[in-house]
Length: 237
Image 1 (cartoon, rainbow, N blue to C red):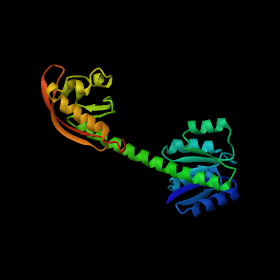
Image 2: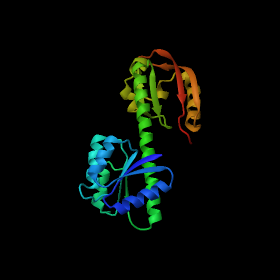
Image 3: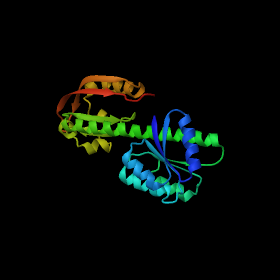
Image 4: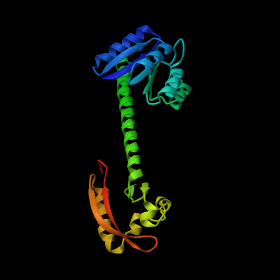
C-alpha cells in the first residue's frame, strides 16, 4: 500500500480525492487541511508521498515543497492544482517537484492521471534508493579491490574506470577516459583475435559473460598476464 498525505484547504475536494484514490485499493490517504497540519504529520508519521494543492490559506504548495525538500529531499511530491500558470509549473520543477497534475476537465481522467503519477513517483524514488545503495556498495568494494573495474559502451569507450589502472597498465586513468589509449590498444597481439571475438559477443548478446586469462602490453613495454571477467549487463539488444 502506498501511504499518501494529501494536503488541500477545501474539505470537499479533500474528501472526494481521498475516497476516489482509496477505491483503487493500492492507496491509503491521510488528509491535511493546511500546510502547518501537513508538516506536523510528516514529522511524526511515515508517508510514501505528499500530494498538495498549490493555493492554500497559510502557505502555498510550493512553500510546502521547499520546506519538505530541506528536511527530506527523498520524499516524492506532487502538486495537484487548478492553477496552471507556466511560471508556477517552472518554479515547482526547479524546486524538485516530481509531477504537476492539473485539476479540472474530465474527473475520471484527472484522477486516473493522478493515481498513475503517484505510483510512478513512488516507484522512481525506490529505484533511486536502490541505485544509491548499489553505488555505495560498489564504492566500498573498489576501496579494497586490487584490480580494475570498468564499464564501456558498445563502441568500446570507457564511461567508468576505477581501481589500480596505472599500477596494472602503466597508463594513467585519464588516458583511457580521454580515448588516448583503448582497451584493445593494450591487448597483446597474440591475444587480439580472441579478445575481439569476445568483445563482439559482449556487444551483441545481452547477459553474455566472459571469464578469460590474457596478456597486455604495458606502457613500459613489459608483458603482463591478467584475469578478466566481463559481462554484458544490458537486458535488451
